[in-house]
Amino acid sequence: MFLSFLRNLACMPSNYADYDPLGTIEPSAWPVASITWTLSPIMRLPPELVHLIISCVDSTMLATCSLVCTLWMPHARARMFRRLSISVSNAHRFGRLFEPLSCVSFGSHVREIELDGSIICDFWTTQVLPKFIVDFPHLNTLTLFGAVPPPLPSAFQVITHLEINYSALAPRITCTISPVAGFVSMFPRLEVLKLTQENGAYPDFGGLSEPIHPPPPHLRRVDLDNAVFLPWITSATHKPPISAIRLDISRSESIKALESLRCLSTSLQSLELIISDLDVGASFLKPNRLDPTTQLRTLRIQADYSQAAHILLKLFSYIDTSCLAEVSLYFAIPYLDSPDPSLLPWSDLDAALAALPSLRRLTVVQVLVSPQGWRSRINQRMLLPDAAHRMPLCHRGFGVGKSSGAADLDSRPPSRAAGSRRWLSDLHAF
Image 1 (cartoon, rainbow, N blue to C red):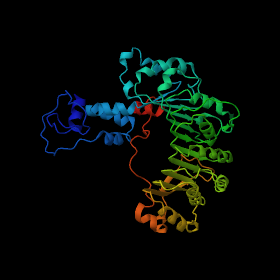
Image 2 (cartoon, helix red, strand yellow):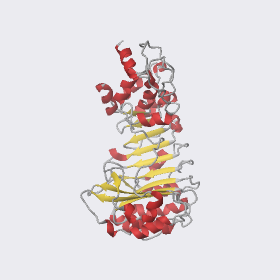
Image 3 (tube, one colour):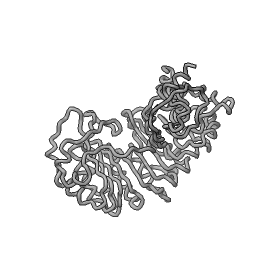
Image 4 (tube, rainbow, N blue to C red):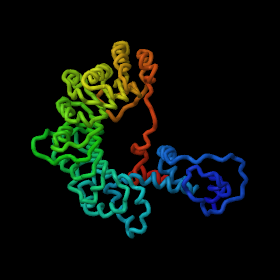
């Protein structure tokens, strides 16, 4: 009765047929009070907007809304079980959910599975988890934290997005590319590959010293925190149709690996370079690393405040800019520093950008980074002072300094993964 009372306060009564903000749920059979409302009809929200709104709501609030109002139930469940986080501490409890299988009702909502480093090489991952994959018909993403696991069963071949995070590895350890390449090649449908090295970890991967497995044939997007993997992708006999690349160039070895970009000149459309070292940035400015016939549509550069503009101008001279439609320039500024903006080549930058015939979107911002060395994913973006004033030609047409555009509804949701410690803490608090 108490829940029914709360529902009457939070939701419209059933006789108000025009009120359905989520727009997809049938009227509930719960008894409601006979209350006369004088509100005007409210338009139903599109599913994309509902998805965007609840992406900012934590697990506690989603669970609360589901108990108070049944209209929230399917949307909250889809959000809460979109990602599953599995570790040694919760693997046994997770497996018991499937006994019997008829008790599992969230399988259709699962899109991503996260495996903690503590369980990646465990018997449970290779022998128990594959039995449940069939209950996740929409599963397409696998995220691994720590070491590369042993070969996985064929049940995982449905994966199209793979992320390996080396945050659990000790920094400066010696590794080889072969185990990683062999593991990645096990996914024939893979389209997106993300190899990250966060939290200061930076394993030392060797070069291509021995024959290794070819990359997946349908790979189209690559996100690498170590460019040494790039030659492995481009050296394949049948090169995958790579259209978008993001590279973190923080060591001198990465500069040489950039020469592999010449092999992708016909398919590459989007390029993002993160240059987090002054010496590496100076080396990047010397030779031409790209094929002059490369026709990019999107170019993003993040580098030190003193080098970012020069690197962007240098890239303009390397490639065919006739199709370049989006340019993003991020000036990396250490905390507590106050560089002089008048020393930057504003006039040259303004003229070069204004001369791009296909440019439709321009972003110029500053990124605050740690003075002790910074990782590209841990930063704070803000408007660059006086950028619009110093670039009058671009400011007239593109609004220099606007750092946010349309919301990316297909991006990875920021909500906590189901089964993770924070997710469970939310539910316990509830």
